[in-house]
Image 1: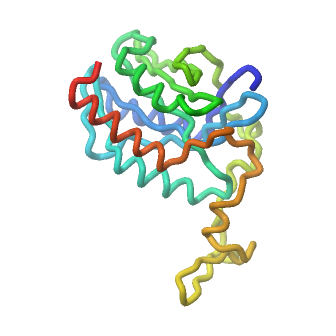
Image 2: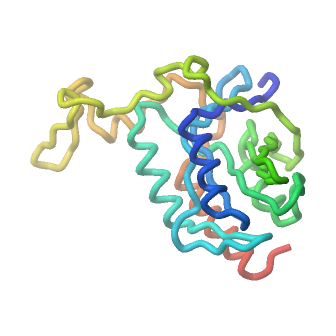
Length: 226
């Protein structure tokens, strides 16, 4: 893979900013989902907020794993492409823009077992909000990387295509509960199992994998994992 860089959709970027504003001055975070391209680009299509049953403090917070898993799947099903879990972001207190030991454990959960690793971002408000993005290798090595916000033309439109956008695209249900799309006449199950035109990681990291890791992370944090 070439030099890594990140492109946020305007929707995903705004979601991060508004989540930070809503929880200011305490910690918060989210999960980044989208696509990974052969040229080193990580396309962040959506940011998943941390959920309802969370713990937010000035130097600590916990995800609501069940909520994150539910919402990630709901949003991923809206897109025609095969969205992947790319990594995560969270706010740090003050100007601390390096990861803690606990952060290291969380990041390696996302990066290991994937040749492409993961991405992880830190947000600081000192006082102007800023975001520092890192690529995390499968071995847990950090590399600062550039990030950009889509100008409306950078991200190919097909990466943002939704399944249902008008009356003609509404699904058809048969007596067995199978859902068909009028445009493609392919069952929903088949749509989700087809390979995306976007290049995926060699070892895919699914949303189901992610929630399993979330639960383990939360358990370790509650035990005072260091």
